[in-house]
Image 1 (cartoon, one colour):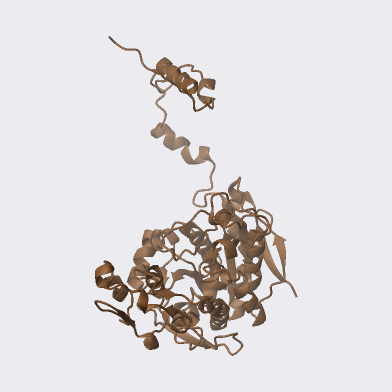
Image 2: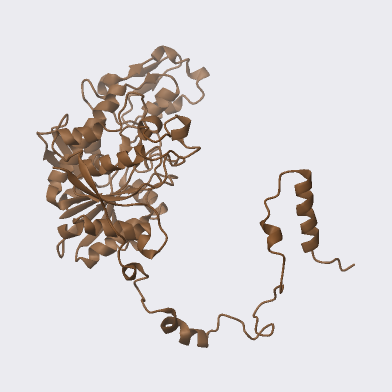
Length: 472
């Protein structure tokens, strides 16, 4: 059977067509509201954004969803998890780092109207183990404890690209983002004899030119939290057999030409993401997990990098479903059917035409990667279906989406206050309030002047006309 994906486009022109309103509409139409019973603890899993990333979802969306969950009688909290190092300078690797970064990005209890928590504890070892015998490559998963303990889980996802997973969608939000640090080691093939980073990488120690010719040699050692890189005056050593694939060193080593990262590691991770997502759903209960994809600000890389590129496609819309495979497939299809944005990575990589695989062109680290590998794995293991019906949801009642704290119209709200504290100075300038010109030539400032001497002269002439008279 086809899964149902509920959808509203991204065009906004009124309160009921604003993106937060559309998010609530698809949330209700898709039946996700029906999962929430009074006093249910509801985890809203978001990506709070890396330090200096600007493409992550605004906290407004999580706040709007949390408010609705409270109306339904639920007890929401918003959460993210600690990461592997991923680089030499991670900003979400511990709970302390995560909370500081999240607060800088606006994810605070005051902004959200509910707690924001690190779901897997200070170091990332607070978790719940789940068996997944049906997994394609993983046979167990380690789910962040607070997420596994929730009664209901809503994956509120910013749909975008991802360097490893190619797409960062609903499956990735739970297949990576809901895993503890132990779970992330598992998904990233830490310790795997064939697909793990040390097994798949090619090491070129002969390319190291010595400390004297490597001014920043210290970072080659300091990028590894397990102290497995050792730099000497004339050579470098890697204790490869002890490496667990924390991802702290690949960028540093590749940048120095010392390592080629094995593409097979990324392919295996793409499959494992789907397995781990299934593990998350099993931990909470598949019937108690729902998905909302905000396909807006579709950046080429994930929110876990500390920058954000030009979006590769225009806003695609708001999607909701109980099927993570179907919702991600619908978003990929929407991106393929959309033109790319001029000046984006999609255009730079010649993947900007309608029908192009936008994420393979602009997000993937290797040409061999597929933007549907994780989706296909999810379909293969029975987590969901690639086949879907897209159900377009109409806008809701405008009354529902107006400012909720005082729904009275302006006269009832402000007449008495304005009589007491008049905001318009009608006692000045014969009742006109302010000192202004009675009439000016408004057409003169609407002309697109050519970038030429004559054009500049016309602007200069206008400037002289508008200049105040010289008192001398």
